[in-house]
Length: 281
Image (tube, rainbow, N blue to C red; front, top):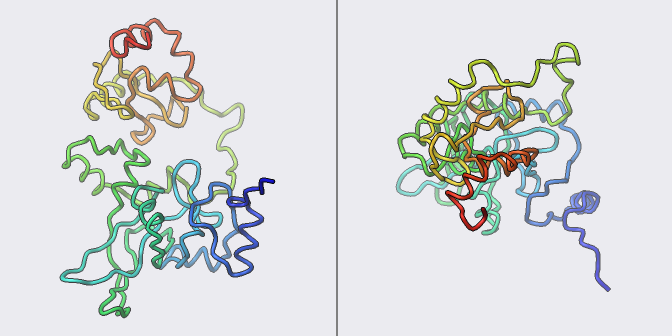
């Protein structure tokens, strides 16, 4: 008889916590603990809350959450060896966090929502926690790569990648990925909602974005020329031309996006397949 798998069952996870047992060592995409208290909300916005690894949730979009709030994650206790190397803070479930989970590194993780870029850090000398200090941390590049935030990709030149890191703003991140996970009331009704269509200047915007991102597909890395490169609206709103909502994709990768299957009936798609993937034409 095969026993049921309770690994990611919300009720079983809650029962384990009530019993004082640690949860399985992975992120659960379905578990949603109770809502944050007012005290916790205030603490998140100041110096953060220390948590165990299993209480951090990976959301469907790849970002991180604690209870009902999207959060930043970092390690507060930093060992000091010959020099003092500051950690990076995380905004997504990235390769770094995956490696730490696989290595069973359960450090003192802290979740926070503070937006000024300052994080409370403790130096660890000779195995003991010393005085703390506010430090300005940089965002993890693996996180930016996981989210393809601002077009970040390791295929970009190092100087370009560093520029995206330097220009990263937590407040702008939380504008794109709101802190609260509660459903929000729509900003428009059926009368005031803008028509979901391309803006008059989208042709110019498309050329600028393609040029800025090296005329290369940000998904597969192909450089098929401007004719077979499209600029995709991530949130499906064709009138939202914010750079963070735009992604350069080749014709095939664009057609493979959800709700874009109709593009495979375009004559240009067959031409693309014959030229770049004859086996599938």
